[in-house]
Every structure is written in structure tokens, then in C-alpha cells.
Image (tube, rainbow, N blue to C red; front, top):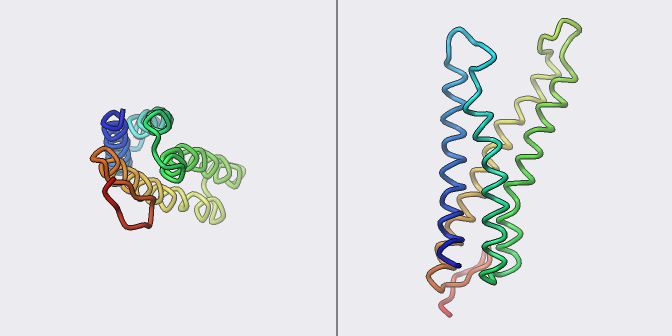
Length: 145
């Protein structure tokens, strides 16, 4: 089960990297259309599912509690991504155009995306160590069991 956990953690990191790629594809699509960010949106729905599956695998494999908590964190951060978009949209002007306030909020979407990337990278690193029998809580020195 440790190996399954490591594979799922790797898939989660891959999905996050793909998410950034698809965001860039949407940003550079000309002309901008409703479907410009379709792949970005679909990948955004996959990341929480993989995070949840990896969390279950980590628990079944008896990973340290902190590592299990870290593994579910991308799911929570994706929820924050959705909230950022919703709050930013509420601050649009009456014509539906972005306002300085909505842009300030919407810019947090990229910063939170970097947090998703960082956490996913840490989870993958720790899952690989755990699958090899090396136990380390995030921020601690690894030790061989």
C-alpha cells in the first residue's frame, strides 16, 4: 500500500503541473473564449479526487499522522481556489467586468496555486521516502526504520 500511496502522490503532483500548463494555455488562447480554460477547469476537479485517494492510501499504509494531514491539504487548497474565484467574481462591476478589487482577490488564485504545487511536491517527496521504509514527518530529518 505504501507504493500505491507514492504513485498517487506522484499523480497528484503531475496533475498540479498539468494544471499550471493548462492555465497558461488558457491565458495565451486567442481569442479568449469560454472554453479557453476548459482543460484547466477539468484538471482542477481531478486534483481533489487524487488528494482524497492518496490520503486514504496513506492512512491504510499507516503513514505518520502529519503526513496524512499534509496529503489531504491540496484538497482544501483547491476549495480555497474556488472560493477565491467566487469572491473575486462578486467584486466585478455592474457590467460584469473585473474591478481593481476583484483583480486583487483573483490574483491570489495564482499564489494559492503555488501553495498547492509546494504541498504536492512535499507530499510526493515524503511518500517516496515512506514507500522506501524511510519515515520522516514534514520538516524533520528522515530516519530508516
